[in-house]
Image 1 (spheres, rainbow, N blue to C red):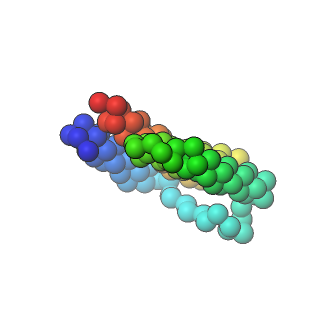
Image 2 (tube, one colour; image 1 turned 90 degrees about the vertical axis):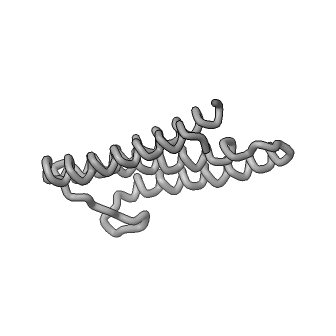
Length: 130
């Protein structure tokens, strides 16, 4: 990894920690809420949508592994579905929190995490191109 990638990743993580710990928790008094994929208080339609996202992730990984078996630089090609999986899961869970528990404002954490995943992917993508 070059200096741009390492510096960008450090700034992204430091910004995430600053926003979550000092702005969300201290200033806005928003509590973080973690729910597993199979928690009892989850909406079953959104849970089914998450299972579809996971199935599409596995299908795309199998397809990419088959099509790119003879290429030399597989790092970015094979990690793209993984970033898409985590980004879409964060957006979906944030949307679920926004629909069902809007007054708690815990969806800010999910959406900020999705933005962090997108920024990390862009930093790594730009670092690979340079």
